[in-house]
Image (cartoon, rainbow over all chains, first blue to last red; front, side):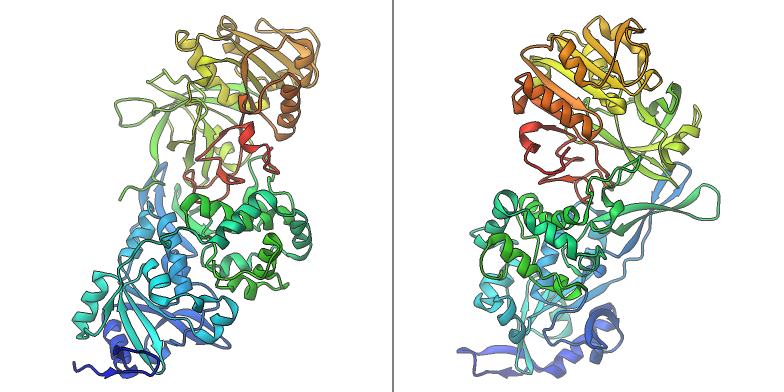
Length: 348
Length: 277
């Protein structure tokens, strides 16, 4: 296939790019042998949906309303079939799939999932069958809210994300980058080789967690004002929407479901939410998280203390989905600002 | 790929009723050459009854016993009700062991005060049985304060005779007849804190506590009055657990996971965490 070279005004050197028609061909090419999930316009918001046509994909750099986690960790998944007291591992259908259009926020969340679920055969099998294609976030949205564009896309962000192919929007066209051999192979098979390769340099920057992340961790663990939680506890209605929308919320419960045949059924893993009362309930009915204030504190503590300490990664990618999902107007940036007693938080 | 949620089958080879709602189950692993998994006293396992789910329980037999292992379970919910219905010869699923248990040598090098309330005695049976089976490894003195609501709620009475040959054991009941002897052990009436007033508390000791949170609070206060250092006080914590491997987030206490970093925590590690006990 003939490739077209463009030099845009914004770049000093010639950057190879893929024009929209080629992108459309590429999506069509992938659709022939893959299920493709990507951002699709649903009413006033974008949602991650399975697509049938290239035109359905809305690659405009905007964040989807819900996160991408359902593509990697279904809201409910069968782990085992059981019969009597023995479990046989469920033979789940893991189709060859493409996650097309993850933003850098979503890829950052995936860094965390890759660590959390490193020993999980279900996650790993699904992940092995998934081609990850990223896209740059729309500058007008994020420069204002998250200060992402004070960072250099390639050195500060992309080198620390795991993906196969990445499309950086350049006007009406896209600069193409690969992050894996698989990405290179797919592009070569399609017949496109004007990409640049980016070598993954680990999920955190060379200097480790950002000063901001460390400052929040220290404040939340050792110094913050606990009255923050009392106030938030009065506001929060424990609906759990933030935990559903959040790309890094991964907690779960295991449940058994019987079928009609005596002694048979399935064991499933389903998303859970630390805002639900049963979350901390033990046999006999005692709950260790006794009120809303404690539950919301648990959520923040997980993201901003436990995750950084357990995995050496930020527990919040700064996408702001929780704030948008909250029906009572709890704003994570405001809460973090209260915790660190400083300006609203930037990218973590 | 290895599946961390896969359970192994264990067969029930003996069931003993220990109190009105508590049974002791002796189990052996099915299909292996050794009947018991390798574990440390204080560690936990997930037991699985398909259709009813999983529950974390403590090992409660001697670490030296390789032919079988035991669990002691109170009937308190659907899963435990079903477990209590099972008979000798039935099988359950188990996975684990999980958590730290008493892996450090500190319990062998120091005197030990064990304080247990109610079914909080269960994980200590493993420790006491292991100490009795291996007196050379556990040469130091052990004192036990064990409180229960009433006489019927006391666990492991049949073991007291053997334990008392090595262990200085004290019982107290919330309600009952003062001065009654239970399997040779004098029984007080009152809260467990009363034992701290009436008994000469073992010196140069570490203390290990397991019981309802409210009891733990009062016991820690007593221990501090008796000059136990924070790092010499250990608590075995209970939490809801789904996974057992530090993923599901249900059992977190501050920065720690009870399933992975616990269930045994030294007080100096958790004293600053609100709601730890």
